[in-house]
Amino acid sequence: MDSILVVDDERSMRDFLKILLTREGYKVHTAPNGTDALKTIADQAIDLVITDIRMPTMGGLELLDRIKQRNTSLPVIMITAFASPDDAVQAMKNGAYDYISKPFNVDEIKTVIKNATSQTPSRFAPEQNADDFPEIVGESREMQKIFELITRIAPSPATVMIYGESGTGKELVAQAIHKRSTVKDKPFIPITCSAIPEDLMESELFGHMRGSFTGAISDKLGLFQEAHNGTAFLDEIGELTPIIQTKLLRVLQEREIKPVGATRHIPINVRIIAATNRVLEEEIAHGRFREDLFYRLAVVPIRVPALRERKSDIPLLIDHFLAKYSSQLHKQVREISSYALEVLMNYDFPGNVRELENIIERGVALESSNIILPENLTLAQTARQQSSTPASSTSNTLVAISKEELYERGLDEVISEVEKKCIEHGMKAAGNSKTKAADMLKVSFRSLRYKAKKYGM
Image 1 (cartoon, rainbow, N blue to C red):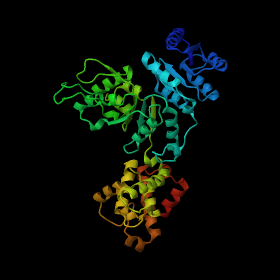
Image 2 (tube, one colour; image 1 turned 180 degrees about the vertical axis):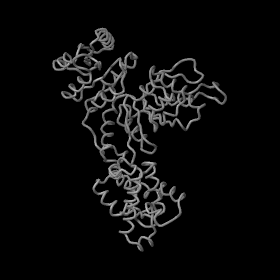
Image 3 (cartoon, rainbow, N blue to C red; image 1 turned 60 degrees about the vertical axis):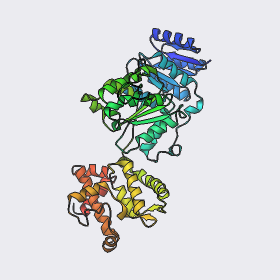
Image 4 (cartoon, rainbow, N blue to C red; image 1 turned 120 degrees about the horizontal axis):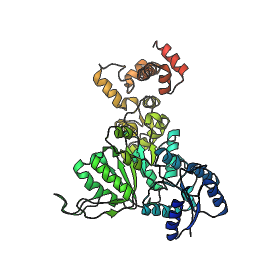
C-alpha cells in the first residue's frame, strides 16, 4: 500500500483528498503546514507528497526544496488555486513531479497520482549530459540547460510548450521528452497546425464519423485518438483558429474529445507538447490567442536557442551533417576547410540548424574532393546581397572565393577583408555601438576597437 502525504492549510481540502485517496487504496497522512509535513516525512515512509503552493509560514515551493534536499527520489505533486506560470516553471525546475490547478478534475488527479506512485527510483536519476541525448547535437551551456530540463520533466505528464525560431529543432526536443517518458513505448503523433486547411483542422485533431460531412465516407480517428496513452505534438500552435483553440482547451480541461458528427464525448489520455515560433504573449494581447489556453499549455516552457546563440555547437553539427550526407550521397567528404568553417562561424543563420544542414548537404553534393572548400558554401544572406548589389570581389567574400582569387590575393588579405566586413555588419546591427557589437561578435571590446582602428573604421 503506497503512503501519501497531503499538505494543505485548508482542512476541507485535506479531508477531501484523504477520503478520495483512501477509497483508492492508499494510506493517507495529512499536514496543515510545511513544518509538520517535514516531521511526518522524517517519521513515516512516504511514497508521494501532494502539497498546496500557497501556505503561511512555509510555502509549497520551499517545502519542495526542503524535501528534495533530503530525498531527491520522492515525487511531489503541487496543487494551487492561484494558477501562475512562474510558479509552475519554478516548481518543475525544482523537481516537482507535476503541477495541477484547483479546481482539478478528480479522474485527472487520480491518474497523475497513479503514475507517480508506480514509478521506480531510477526515474529520478541524476541529471543527464549530452551523451544521453544522441538525437540532439550540442554541448553548449544553452543546450546543457535544455538537457537538464528534459531529464526533469520527461517522466511527468505535465504539458510542455516549446518556443523557438523556425529550424531550431523544436520537434527533436519534443521527441526527446517522449522517449524519456513513462509512455515512450506508446505513440508519438506530430501534427503541424499551419499545414492543415482550416476546414479540415477539427477533423484532423478530433476525428469524424462517417457521413458527418461531404466526403466523410468512413469513420476517421483524429490525432488525439491515435496518440491515446502516448504523446501528441502540436507544432505551430499559434496558427490555430479561435474555434479550434476553444475545443483544444476543453481537451486539456476535461480530457475528452468529440469527433465531428459524434453524439458523445470520448475520454482520452494524452500528453500534449506544443511548439511555436511566435511570441504568444503578443498574440494574446492582440486577441489572436486565448489566454486561458496559453496557461494550460505553458505549464512547463522550454526555449530552444537560435543557432547564433550557441555558435560553439556549429563544429559539432557540421561533423554530424558531414557524416550523414557523405553516407547518403556516397561521398568521402569528411572535413571542412578552416576558412570555410570560419565563414560559417561568422554567419548568423537566419534559418538556424535546418539552414546549416542544407548548406552542408549542398556542399557535400557539390564537392569533388574530400574536404568542403569555401566556394561550395552557399549562404542565403549573401545570395540576397548579391541580388541587390553589383558583383565584386568583396560582395561575396563572406561566402565563397574562387581558388584562383584566393591564391592571387593571399590568405591574409582575404581574411582581413572578411574580418572587416564582419565588423561592419556587427557595428551596423548594434547601431554603431562598439560595446554591443563586441558582445554580438563574441570578441572583447579592446579587440574590436583595435581592429576597427586597424581598418580605418
